[in-house]
Length: 313
Ligand SMILES: [Zn+2]
Ligand SMILES: [Zn+2]
Image (cartoon, rainbow, N blue to C red; front, side):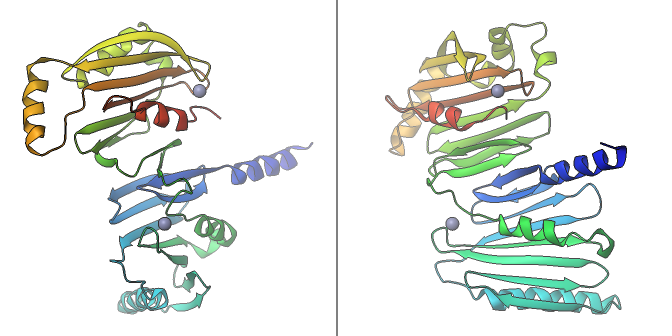
């Protein structure tokens, strides 16, 4: 194979590697080299933006429709009218097309850049999704843009809520809502709440460096346990997906829990008495993973979420 042919193959392979981004169940697939640069909002209303390494951008918005099926065509026309207005102010002419495609509306516009977009409405989630890929004419990104737009989803078939950030994919039951989050490529933390119950999912990069001078247990004690309050914990070493791992379990203990229990008894939600956690070192991806949950007796939320994480390809 000559060099230019090898180069072409490499380019093709890169084009074919895609990754998933999901926030509050709103899911889209993008070329792997594109990166998430902003995400905000909740299940009712939110926004995410993904940038290509060159000058293309994917913008996606979602909002609750309040039980009334929206006029997608009218919404799309409104978006194009606003675009036309702002371009006119800058002296730029816009040409555009919009099309009703049954369950979705697609649009295209061209000014100094090109935009291709899609609007969908899901009755089950009662949510409108609007996405557009914007690119400079010289990038000729139409095929990629269409693949991105066709990949838009707003729910999984199993009723779990999808989350996927920087290659970290999992899902949680709908009763768990996002409480706090930290998003860095080297460390991701998503903390969910289901009334008084907590679920915390974390991923660390550069695992070899992090655990270099520690055992997995020492690392867990140093980096994870300080965040666990009010539980008396115990550990065992186990194998998780073929990796060295830990199982952690605990029972509510101490004055803090007693005070919390009284507080929650006033709101009818009992404070969970049990804690279960798993952590493992995936050598293939050089990452550390942790899932832990406080729960009532007999619940297996930590196991369910753990089993949904594919730590390496
Ligand atoms: Zn849906
Ligand atoms: Zn792994």
